[in-house]
Amino acid sequence: MDERIQKLKERFEKEISEKKDLSDIDSIRVSYLGKKGSITALLKGMKELDAENRKVFGADVNKLKEYAAKRIEARMEEFRRRQIELEIASMPKFDITAPAAKTMGSYHPITLVQRQCETIFKSMGFTVEDYPEVVTDYECFESVNIPKHHPARDMQDTYYLENGQLLKSQTSAAQNAILRKYGPALKEKGVPIKAIFPGRCFRNEATDASHENTFFQMEGMMVDKNISISNLIYFMKTMLSEVFRKDIKVRLRPGFFPFVEPGFELDISCLICGGKGCPSCKHSGWLELCPCGMIHPNVLREGGIDPDEYTGFAFGLGLTRLAMMKYGIKDIRDLNSGSLKVLSQFTDDE
Ligand code: FA5
Image (tube, rainbow, N blue to C red; front, side, top):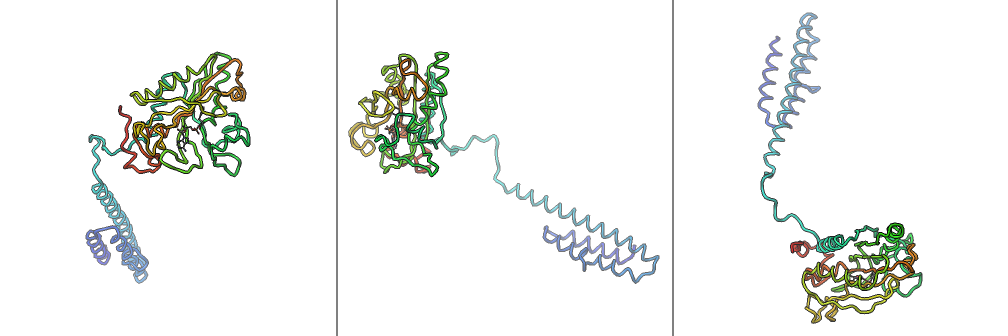
């Protein structure tokens, strides 16, 4: 091998062995294999040799060129691998056998009471239904006996969308769909309609300790032959005693809702102040929790059910207020605050 080629190879080998990182390697590529690099220069100088020597010299320079390119690639790969190894070594260690961290997250108190209510009602044979948050005027109002311009609409300052739909202001918006879904099984096979449907509701409310513009309700319905107010009271009592697991004072008073007749307001004695009066219960000692009543014949008829043959009850439980009472949360606004300090302290441990 020509001495110049041999010397250049030795210099290249020394330099590449001394390089310490990826960026250094690139400079060596330029200085040996680049347009003005040392190996390229040898190739350019070949033209001064005679034909025979040029052939041997050319072959040897090409061998060196090939060797240098491979060596550079191998060295780069070595640096890349080392970099990955360093990154892995600097990562926090994960011990798969270590016990789970305590700060894992928690369920929102409304989710907790919702799930609890679902479990209670499922155990009594109710199905749990899901329903959209954007509904039509027909679903939310007309199908439940609240025609256009009915004064009852004033009780629910509703958010209308430009396309005429609205954000549901009450879970009663699902009543008609439920009657239509389960009506055939009731009429053909005598299977009673027993359904609950929890969901988020929206009203343009002035907020205070017990009112939010976004809150949760849980609607419930039961329809069969001979359903009476006694059935309604039984299910309400069972649900409340299961949720609170202690005696709570309840009162039932007449209430007007166009979709029930008779209609009631079911209030519970405020558990924040023990009934003495506080901002959470508007200083009355009582909290409106679960309006209810016997389903109006017009609603049954609109849902395809003959009110002369079947009767039923419906209720609209205020889930957000139930969460407040169950967990002693004084201000409803804390529930939508997103503050983990407030929201992460609750569990469903009984
Ligand atoms: C209704 O929404 C009826 N659809 C309930 C109903 C269903 C009656 C079936 C009869 C038969 P009301 O507007 O009162 O009724 O709301 C029901 C419950 O939702 C209230 O008792 C209260 O607990 C809760 N609620 C109502 N408005 C708010 C609000 N702004 N913030 C928090 N909770 C509310």
